[in-house]
Length: 52
Image (cartoon, rainbow, N blue to C red; front, side, top):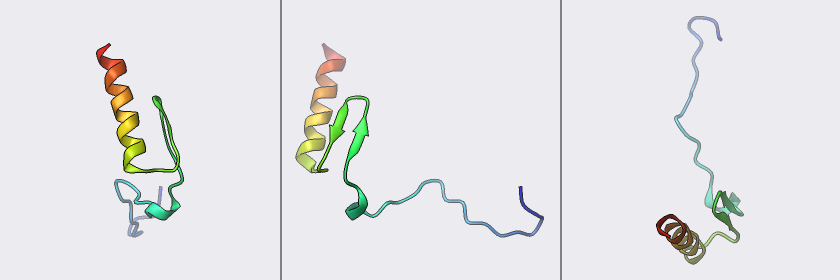
C-alpha cells in the first residue's frame, strides 16, 4: 500500500543481464554453463520423458 499519488514502476517481469546468469534450474535438470547446446539437450530430454 502506498499513499494516493505515489508513483511506482512495477514491470511484469525482470530482465536479468545474460552475463549474470550462471545456471538455469528446472524440474528436468540444471544447465550450467548456460549454452544453446545445454538448453537444447535439456529440452530434448524433457520431450523424451513426456512421450515415453
